[in-house]
Amino acid sequence: MRLNNSDLEFVKRKIPKKLVALMEGPEWYDKIFIAGGLIRSSVTGEPISDIDVFITTDIKPIDIALLLEPNTEKHFVTDNAITITSFKPSLQIINRWSFKNPGEVVKSFDFTIACAAIFVKDSGDWDSIIDDSFYEDLAARRLVYRYPIRNEDAGGSILRVLKFYQRGYRIPLDSLAGVIARLIKDFDVKKIPLSDEKSVAHVLTGLLIEVDPNAIIDESITMEDHNVQ
Image (tube, rainbow, N blue to C red; front, side):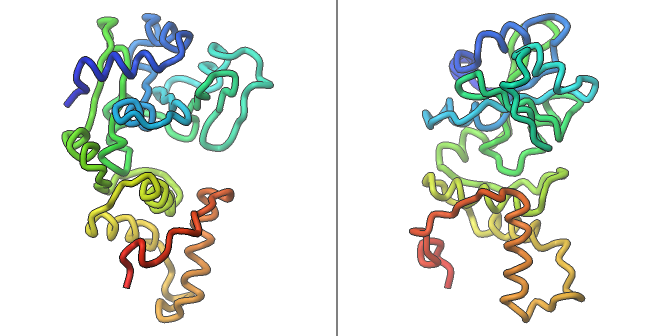
């Protein structure tokens, strides 16, 4: 499926002009994709925190970053991305993952409401790809887990569940179970038996901290809020 034309144009207007001009250069057709949060937030009217820019496997992320911002003092580099702080919202050139095409980007996301990408195709026209349930789940503010094949820290999806929950989204029980399964699938029960709840919780906390050492969970969210009994 695709974004409707109105949403595609609306999302495009949120992209910095310098990035739009770069993507519309013939040498970059089908090689640079914008995906994820910008598209979701543009459609829902939520604040946009940053813009995630994905590239094909034959491009070096630093080359795109330098074309957009030659001053490397305005680059903040991590294992996951090169963030260009001179743009508002900031641009994140993803360097941990690269893809052959925008369809692969969309398939890599964990929730249907994130499965959206826009790009310039070979004809020079802007195009998009979204999950078949993107609009339906976004309208319902529903997190549906997709069991993606992705190289990511185990706790990434569960931290995103907490963040979306704080924004008023809900998650069906089967999707929550899938997210939990991803977190524990590589847990070594031979070293720590599941009956030792405190030790298991300590290990799982470590896995979550590895994803985001600065993560702060709102203390106002209680077990009752999550309907956990």
